[in-house]
Amino acid sequence: MLAGPSLGQGREETRSKPGTLLSAAAEQTTRYEGSGGPLLQLIDVSKYFGKTPALSDVNLTVNRGETVAIVGPSGSGKTTLLRCINFLVPYDSGRILVNGRLVGYREQQGNTVRDTGHNVNEIRKRIGMVFQQFNLFPHRTVLGNLIEGPLYVLRITRSEAVTRAQAALELIGLMDKVEAYPDQLSGGQQQRVAIARALCMEPELMLFDEVTSALDPELVGEVLSVMRQLARKGMTMVVVTHEMEFARDVADRVVFMEASKIVTDQPASDFFERPSTPRIGAFLSRLSLPRNSD
Amino acid sequence: MIQFAKDYIPLYFAGTLVALGVAALSMALSVGIGLLGALGRMSGNRTARSVTSAYVAFFRGIPPLVLLYVVYFGLPSWAQELGVRPLADFLAPLNNRIMSAVVAFGVNSGAYSTEIIRSAIASIHPEQMEAAQSLGMSYWLAMRRIIVPQSARVAFPPLGNEFIAVLKGTSLASVIGVTELMRDAQLVAAATFRNLAAYTLAAVFYVVLVIILQSVVGRLERRLSLVHK
Ligand SMILES: Nc1ncnc2c1ncn2[C@@H]1O[C@H](COP(=O)(O)OP(=O)(O)OP(=O)(O)O)[C@@H](O)[C@H]1O
Ligand SMILES: [Mg+2]
Image 1 (tube, rainbow over the protein chains, first blue to last red):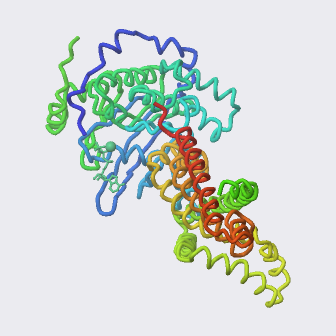
Image 2 (cartoon, each protein chain N blue to C red):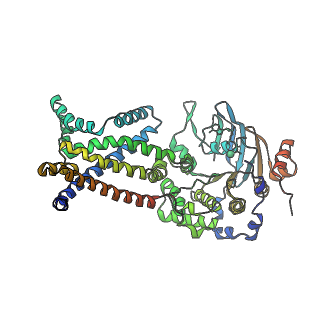
């Protein structure tokens, strides 16, 4: 699904309220900053659905504090890549390391076997995921959504969880919606809450899967602006997106996928200024990236 | 007729309370079985799946009256004859008519509750499970905190209807001598020879009771709704 027409929407809005979210949660800044070195590594990762390859020998390294955008045509394996990272989809071969720790498998007497559910959950706790369809818990208020994981997975106290939730709500600018239910919020607000829900787990890595694709064009900007804040604060992020302007402005690197493979992996500026293959040129022109206006 | 009603309304009220009590206990058993049954039906474990499917197929096929006879007249005396002490002790409570009625109706209705709860759980988008798991929740924690509470709201209206069906079904317990509403009507009919009046009055009690229950269910349904707009 290409979000061509919505491209670049909300940019004005983003700029017209400079830094409000940033200043609101400025004291959190250090929390997201790591010590450098690769946080995420994919080594020769492959995944088949039946006979269909979804990932073929994918290699990717993401350093702490980096924002990597993943772009590419529909069906190229972007979602599968993200879902393998937190093992929502078990990969067939290769290795995925988060913080040096193998995801989903372990060595046992020289064999690689499926890791325990407990260990997989230990890794998932530290990886935040945001979905295209928000997937908020409809039976819980905004606050209920935010404290669910901290209370029942991290098992911190209720007051700590509520403090975290308030900080996250401040960051996304929805302090007045604590008691609202998800279906009382706009799509953009729901998606911001979904980001906040992930942040409340204090993850070291955030995965975003086309988080603005289900939104009305006028709501895209508010969500991208929250993601910008996170990137600026040093959160490590892997962002599958069709928002090329966001990729160009926020991502450190852009990874282009096609037919289950990573075709290129370059600094964002290079990707847009000097497309390294004609296919990328074609892909970009289909998305009709507006020329840099400044 | 008016005088007749005046004379027997207190007795019918008592019978109504017994019917409600039997229905409530049966329904509690039914929902408990239904929850386990639904999890079994959806489980990855093959044995759990076949056992629960067999349960549903079997008990949906048995008329409740037949089951009631088996439970009340059959099981305790069978255990007695068999002479296995622990089994006889275990089944002894079934000599109590109300207990037998609750077990028979609960186990029968449990087959329906299993299907109601199973389809309620299945109606929750799988993305809810994924969202929960992406927070690091285990399957069971996600079930307990996220999936089942949402399913409960979906299952509530059909379970409410099931409760009403169970309530009407409690009239069958009259055949084993539970003095619920129907049994009271039979006693009155026998004593007064006014069959039409005795059974019509019982019918009126059932109708009013069901109408009240339906409105309570409707009200709770709106309160539990997942839609907050
Ligand atoms: N659960 C699944 N079962 C079978 N095939 C699947 C499944 N999920 C993905 N695939 C296949 O794997 C390939 C990669 O799909 P994936 O969803 O990762 O692509 P994508 O890049 O995210 O596409 P889009 O931009 O449309 O979201 C496709 O061929 C898809 O049909
Ligand atoms: Mg996708």
